[in-house]
Length: 286
Length: 130
Image (cartoon, rainbow over all chains, first blue to last red):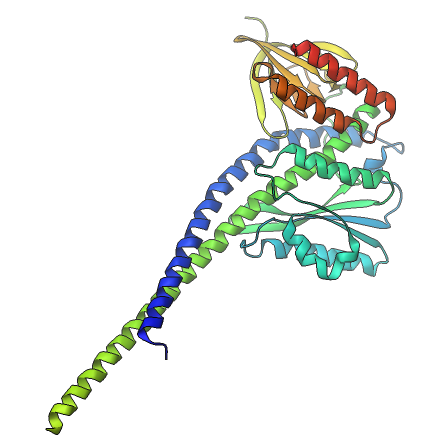
């Protein structure tokens, strides 16, 4: 049975914890709004890019660029696993890692080679135990205050270099698609060879310099754009996940305070009752 | 009032402009072109250069380092890799832009392409007045 003083201290410390989680929730909410805004701002570019590439790609026959058609093999799979740099965001990182691990196991079972490029510290830590030998690189975004297109370009450059050098045949990115504050969907998206939904080819365009040249120019950009979109979605998801995790934590701390307060009051009352009984029975004995 | 066309300039990070323009001067990869209403549908890649949009409010110029433009009879949408309004440009930003772009263009391309990109960048720098 904890003493009254212990209980009081407990209550005090849980109250402090609640303050912290509450503050973190507010910060996450503010950051979430910003992350959503930048995801929103990036959307027109990505959509237009996808549409143009899709309409160009649908007209391509056998001579399509390798980024579109693949290099004819699917032996080496590069998995780009995007996670967060910081923890305390609920199941955010675990869901991505679980999806990636599941895919990696499947691929290995099929006799394929798996390589992993991690973006964000948390995913690397979680994958380190089983897949350390598959690591080919790590992108550290912990110093990045605001995600820019150049971050995505950096990752895209690494991925493209690996593809060009024949060190990867299929590239898939793993990230959490933002749906709402309480729901983020872990998503695997294949970026090389590029997959685009076949678009309706509406207008007949003139191409300058040529259709092939434009497609060859656009495909690497398309990869970077997809990665950028994924990074932004991931950032928004992270803040969303953190917000709901901290909301839960705040609520749990509140429940705990209530429980402890009741316990505190009870034991205080018990102590008073005990004293009274002692006094009364002392008086009766006289 | 001259006939106008819808001009959109978007970069991966944000939408920079969306106005009704009377003409848009585009630094195309194969040469400059001006798009006005009724232009034949065209898709062109951009070289680093200055993009100008003439609208009722005057001419607005942007420094772009690459990307592509989609022109139709009623609108122009430019998807630029990096785009900065000319009046927000300063020498430091310009140098950084050139450095970034030349780093990006030196990967995975042959020597001729890389050299062309470099000379385009220098030309862009000169045209912007830095």
